[in-house]
Length: 325
Image 1 (cartoon, one colour):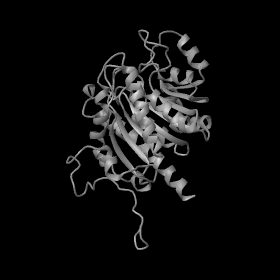
Image 2 (tube, one colour):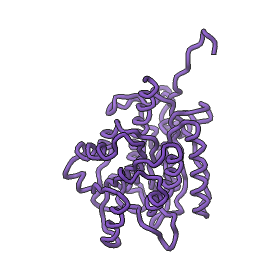
Image 3 (cartoon, one colour):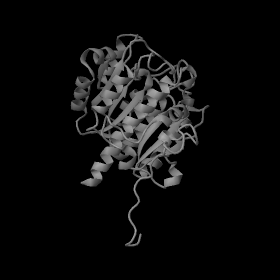
Image 4 (cartoon, helix red, strand yellow):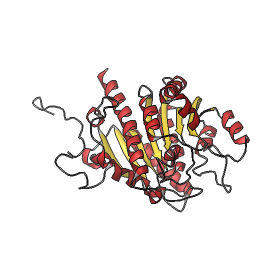
């Protein structure tokens, strides 16, 4: 750079006032591709994988469905008073191509790809895919930050031991993560839990791993602000990973998912809780289990795209604040 040049700011999304939202490639929020900007502060990546599901398949198509629904996102987020794509470079890193016939290999592939991206200094906003992918993503994040706090939004615990003898499934990632020592067990929380379990021992085992539970009924009775305050206190200033299974929402708000459960949160409640966590040190996040074959009018994909937008905004704000110091 010569003395006459000015530093280039982040490359933002396509201008939807000039190019219709339904035109052109469906990158997340119409952002540039990673290969177009060279490096990024937040990489939005897809993992088209659903070989770990135990009921309805189809989440392998979730990432692209979320991208399509994200065409309607705009560059200013009034809820957080921030323009996330101007505060930091955010780019769509495309998909991690994983083996659909070998779960162990797929887990290794996701971890290696995440290592490469995090190694450049990027934070990850991952679009699944089924919840199996949270384990390799957490492994990669922990290599940089050490054991991380985990905030897990889901209808289900996902701390079961095995399914049909398989250790890697969408119902087991967080038990594996605890066993591997990559989670800070003083700061683990589930939010949105509800529905029948295999037995009361499921809750006992989960508690022994260090998880606290905020049920969907708790959110309804106590409200989003009180729940967010409780979660902030539990997380503190620890590096935080947020993993969101879209089935934390009620089927009325997210019908397009593999294991729906009645009595879930509204999309408004989820978004408000996330906004209440804006002061937490969010190092990466995922939104998983969107299965568009069961969706109606993109209800689930729209909810997921706005969820990813709020998470991306939090990360972009924190990156900008760190640079300003």
